Image 1 (cartoon, rainbow, N blue to C red):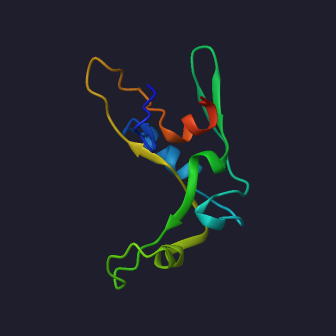
Image 2: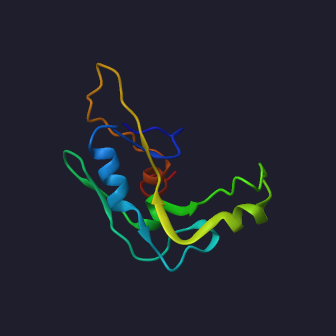
Length: 119
């Protein structure tokens, strides 16, 4: 399922979700501007007649650690302070689709569309 309004990749919440998140979480020496440009595992999604391959910059972002003492702010400087400079997390969201959709349905959102869709 492809969704232009989904900013993440939706995955089933069963055993796959936590295992995939743990596997794709990685360290990177290049997380400038919140991007994960360093080496890390590739994400391959096998479809019936093709395979979608995403590199770390496609599916991951720098992990943001919030400081509970800092309060709520949208100040860009505060956001940059909260970025873990070497930790990258996958842009995944666990979601379960109701019938008649398959419980193994993936929602291919913005990370896939940015790499594979052109106008």
